[in-house]
Image (cartoon, rainbow, N blue to C red; front, top):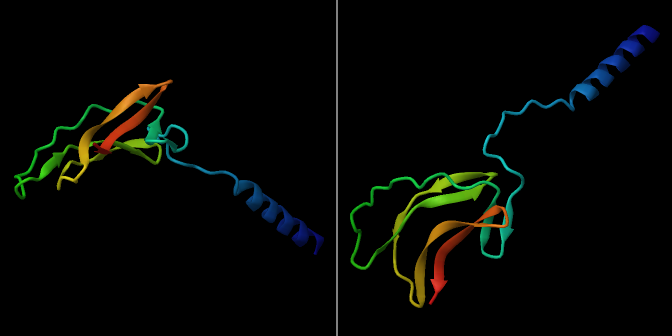
Amino acid sequence: MPRVRALSTLTALSALLLSACVVAPYAPYRQGSQVYDDQGPVAEVPPPPPQVEVIPVLPYAGAIWLGGYWGWGAGRHHWVPGRWDRPRAGFYWAPHRWVPFHGRWHLRGGWRRG
């Protein structure tokens, strides 16, 4: 009986110790946690070059094209495709861009009051 108890204890202890071992895939674009400033996301790495977009046919008169841009989420850049939208009274569209500031990259752009 003591041998069974010792074996049981050893098995439980081994399971407990091995549960702390985690094998996770390498995430090359992961850089710290998600950070925002007062205007949007902040990234530790610069964005890739912009992607070339084919602008579809104008869907209705007065529509404006909002070009795609590199967004930031889950610790990496991801492409946000462009789209057609309606103009908004009292606002103008400022295209998204990444601005370097104090060693980090800050996303700026979107609808602005004007």
